Picture 1: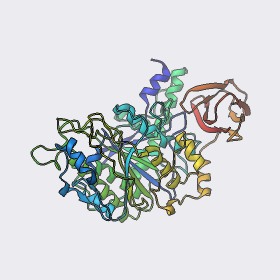
Picture 2: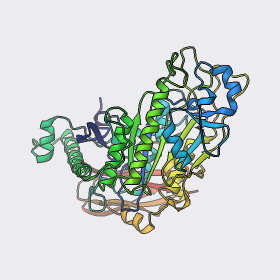
Picture 3: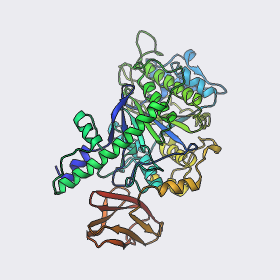
Length: 532
């Protein structure tokens, strides 16, 4: 295995060296290309909580199109919830929620929940792995991206990361995943920086810095690099631990620990936010949605069973979290979103389950979510076959676009840059939500140490890249948005001081490109935009 491939496979994330409430915490660190994760907040800044429903959630059994029951009964009679038991929503006819979702029904009725109907993308993929990648990277179905949409957003906001981090402006982790499974949503596309620390001896060395001397070889330099990341991880680990000790939970709605894993995770998130942690993105997940069989209980009624349990856990956890955030006085800062890699087929199978499908509903929740239903019920044909799917009403990247524009307050051109294409935002978030000042954004973008920059940016055909050297070897490379190396501008020992090199992009199409600077074990990667 080549050294770069080894690092890519062995260091996908930074793990914090402790657990909270019995749950491991993962600090999602910054990869080289597209400098993915950074972020910090003042009290008015915004937090996004991503809830991934792993396996492919059955949307027709979650947000129930009561007005389509006649045709649904022809193809789903063995798993359909009885119409009398569907939860009715205030001021809504023809649409209801699964009876296990009483808590989220209350949130909807209080105007704290937006149901987005039939979310998907053109030419859907039905592989769990590939579909998850598409949702996490915001790619087209036939396009491979190696960076997550959240990672690109944070890279855009904090382009100097990781050099000089943590610092007084950015003292806290860039993004946190509660649990040990790493999501690609915050990752970059090249060598990832991160380390999972579980061995006590390794942790002691991390704290004390008592390492053996690295050999003066290429492998030794990589070892120094990994140790530096580990030291940075320890600094983040300490601030997270401090926040956890300082924070609190006020809601009495959480179930007992261990009963509802999603509630356990969200309880930690609320505690960390209340403890003053300035992390911008939190990622949690709930497994089990690949319900090919046993989706309902054959003896207890079609409104019961495994899928009903999952929906009940979601509903209970989100409601408890929202109640906690409100009692803590943080509800103006926090927005939550659920997503799953795909929905299920319209027709059920003979195993009391459903097979991989296409579009499905999403939930956006919080004080600043616009309550209501976005879109209409899917129309169910009278001649559904085993291959029929719910057609897409909204591209999932329009939801992301809405969050980037109306929650994180990016300009339209910036949103397009992050998503690598244009997707119209939806009316999902209150107009008054954006509270991050341009002065604050400018300050945060300058935090850390900038060793390389380009001007002008955006540019037409030519842009100048200015960089610093300490007299050692300097490498400057150009990548396209698919993380493909297209040019190497500098690859040599360079005299100390400031230098410039011109990038001629006349042969390349308009779009977002990335220039990567490396000086020994230090590297920075920044975006630049070529316009027509």
